[in-house]
Image 1 (cartoon, one colour):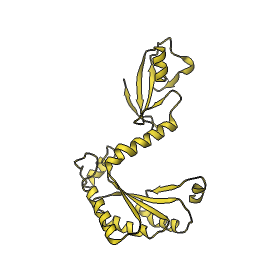
Image 2 (cartoon, helix red, strand yellow):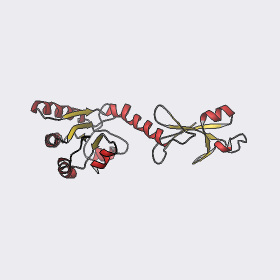
Image 3 (tube, helix red, strand yellow):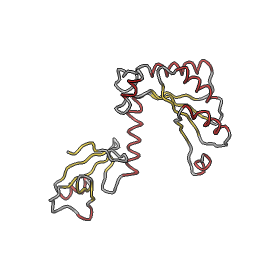
Image 4 (tube, one colour):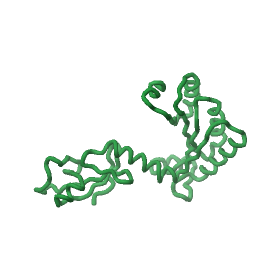
Length: 212
């Protein structure tokens, strides 16, 4: 599969493995000849510094692995209960787990002192929140937007929700949405038809953000 991906043009692969799969992945990567950049991404658990260092040392001995990304552990709506149950606390930035950044910096210092021969990058939660997530949304929006949908700079999907009784609604440019007939904002404004603005996330369920 790795060889087929490379033939198809993939030039970088990032792996987020379950700890129990690391050794089998290392075995696979040791036995295959590929030129793409392969990296591992791991969250920095504040109380798992020693385990993370052991993993970094192990990965540094595999020539096929080009880099390791250490992600500051994020606190989110989805994982807050699980993190709290494990004894983790929200940091003062309201985004990350307290102690994750400090552990990541300690890991970087130790790896440098030991001369670990692999590129290691630290990704703060604020960077992912401000840039990476927004860019991913924007790319997904561009790929999934329908002809009448506009992708905002933040990556959300924006369109016009027409009033059901609107006689001037352009039938040939009207699409059936989950909340009613839809068209593009530009067309709705040009024709002067009564409408409301719908904003959604470009995810698989098209999460509704606003109707105004």
